[in-house]
Length: 234
Length: 79
Image (cartoon, rainbow over the protein chains, first blue to last red):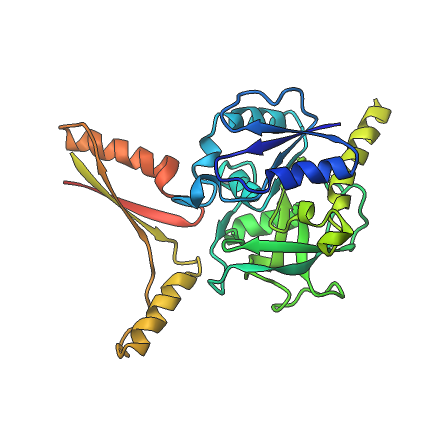
């Protein structure tokens, strides 16, 4: 499987994402934001960082990068797209995911390990998980406070588009377990077609035990499983 | 032609930065401050002599880039 990792000016986790892909034994290629082609990639990762310095709003300028036309087309054809942190913000600004991101409720930049609960396993990035599985992942963000207006939120919850939720280490949703004040403790969501997933925590920074947790590997292994299952189904 | 765009968070969006500014003002002695909401201000200079066309153009810019309609509202003024 070939993963395309998009690099925007200011992305800083593209190499980590590519490394995480190689840790699970797959191929990753870093693609510059001005390219117009995903080079036959089977999956796309929009990595963490500070694309365009977060100027104006996080992801607001990156969403207009030439590569995003190819990413949109890839997504509309059902291709798996994973937005991590800044990547999630880009997907929101691009309208590939519903809602928006605002400043952490505490106003502080939060950088620590948190726990997320996998809410749904019917996405390419959670296909190898079980419902309710807890993953220990690091977050590092100042604007991870997910927001959606009441109608959008109701729609997202009803359509089971919440994929990851912040919980304590027992799987309970609590105020303290939510690092940024996001509505409904939402840590990650998917689109209606369930092929585009965005999450604020960093699975690629939890891909080896020496990083403090290797729980993030399953997010990437899931897409390999989903891909293989689809090939077998054909 | 000069245009001004004021972008503010929608009332339903909690503004933690505004809250910090309000608290700072109160601790400076401005006890009568009840709330502060922080927004953005853009000055756009564009090549145009028609204020109506300029306003329409800048409104388009606000819709497309300057404001995120999910969380922000805006106002355009042309001078």
